[in-house]
Image 1 (spheres, one colour):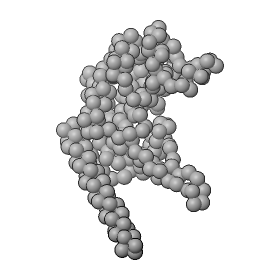
Image 2 (cartoon, one colour):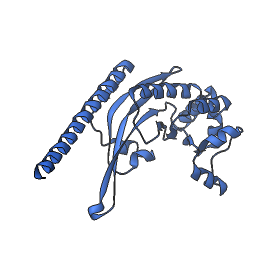
Image 3 (tube, helix red, strand yellow):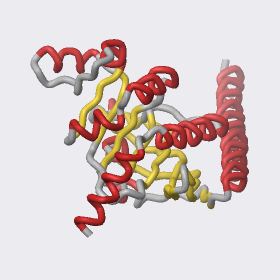
Image 4 (cartoon, one colour):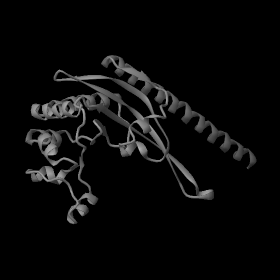
Length: 239
């Protein structure tokens, strides 16, 4: 019996070690794939943990969750969209959530990917666009719901809110609404002249990073010229 217990313990330890080795290998492969993507884009890459990221982007709720927060596998560089340069940053983010007390105390680690673009228009009104959820419908019942558009189909699928309705209507013109319904992006959050694209739940594959960057270029490519001109005029006036 004692021999069996020893064998079980040795087997369990071997499995843990094998799991750790496999995890390390997969993380190294991911890191190198993202490094290759950065080189392809002409961007810089850093696998180091950046614990200042959550302060730099504190206006985005998903970077303020839990504790032990850090960005890593960070790609950064310029995106050119219709003659304008947008500074972009993408990568992985991790945080921990501790629950319970005493012996039942437990810490869970979460990871997700994101893409942030700094908008070259000065002050841009806040705007959030995401898939409609059950709580949004309840809030709508009490008069605290989404900004409504002429497309009932779009209204059923997306929650939209912001501090400038005219800006929301200008950006979300019929062609843009069709684009959003066809592509079904993660949450789009524009705050303080920056836009964050992320679902806040999972990490993207290197190919998904490519698709999200391409999506971002198409999204801003669909902004009407008069919207960009108006934002630039506002920036000049306040400057």
